Length: 513
Ligand code: HXC
Picture 1: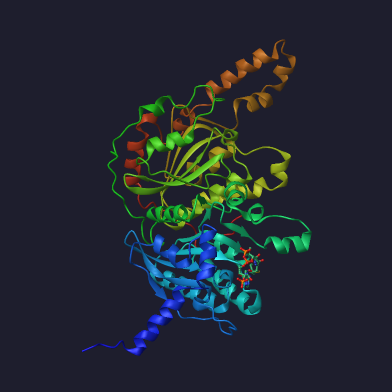
Picture 2 (picture 1 turned 120 degrees about the vertical axis):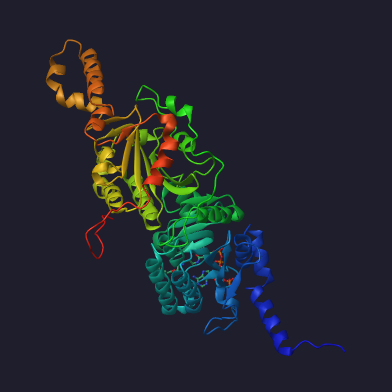
């Protein structure tokens, strides 16, 4: 007997097919021609195969003159490496992925589900921002998204993957999330598009000049990662998740390593040059300490005088904060302060222990820095470390002068363990500056001021610029052989798992911002 298909099933399939096509084949072709994938293709590529479950595929815009399937966004949940994540992907083929109230409420539904079920939210953005024709309704929708971005902050990880133009609200929602992944050539993030900029200022700018990957990865500090194409951006996002717990009450997943916990690294014993003016690469220090190939730098293109990133030690995630002696001698400036403070707060929110490697001459002096608020920005580092209740371990590899010593996770502000390499120089300021202040009379009278200065600098260095005075006072817990840093840190992280960093009860502090 010939079986007929139930017409209700036929209708379902027809509706599913229409929803799959979004804004239609010609717009999909246009999307592909720009080197971009469709919303559904992105989700398929991102999640573990076959795990995506869609929510509300049949929603349409409320007062549509034309039918907008899915209303410009595909939402749902699935898995990454077997762990649940909630996703939304904006569909540029439908009204430029612009946000209507229905579109917004599809996003807020996954935000709510993610928060109540303790799973990360991944947004794949490709949107012209608030849907102009909807007026206030689209603004209401954005407000509802922003509100949940704020509520979810510190509860579940939020990651925004930028995969096209992202204007207005499509820039501000990501700005409230933990990480922004840019995509070379195709992602452009700005508050208002070039046509609006031109109408207001007369200035002719391209999408890329306004907010391309180079701008946000290299200059503005808005982007944390950059992928060469969509595939790489999505792979970066999967990798990032591997270091993170699903929510703020879980620990990050442990990923077994075949890198021995007892491995020493002889190369570290000679990496720091004896001459303090000669730089070395702090990334090499990090790579020799952590589990092989696990160092994953964050914001590597911006404020390169400092380094922040995730890694694993004996399979457990750690957040690393360091300075880069090869860039501006690792000095702390405004951007570096923002970069460190935000990363420290992220790690603290999600139970990632902090390892701080210190080699910094201090805060950058100068009129520009003072006038732009280095005091206000630098204070963020202090605040973030003081507030952080995760295990905090720091190691001074070379310079830790003055402010840099204190703010970069010293014991005085709450480090659980503060170590130093023999090359550490811990003092109120660098030898040259100190000699100028302490010995200005002798230098003014000297027959050969240069020779006297050299002699005084050496005397200062011998007396103050070493780790032993700090170690004698117990301000440094131990001076260790650099080669043994990895096993020492692994043992420390086993011993210091849940330190008590009690703070007075309060609603919340008033972080300098
Ligand atoms: C409605 C929109 C739209 C929008 C794009 N489209 N943006 N429809 N509302 N905001 C539609 C276009 O009309 C077009 O429809 C289709 O999407 C593709 O857009 P194009 O302009 O053809 O594409 P492209 O040249 O790639 O340019 C993309 C763009 C540009 C850079 C996003 O469209 C643009 O500048 N849009 C406006 C950006 C903006 O200023 N948004 C801010 C909104 S204010 P058809 O039918 O022709 O295919 C906001 C408030 C939030 O978001 C508050 C924050 C605090």
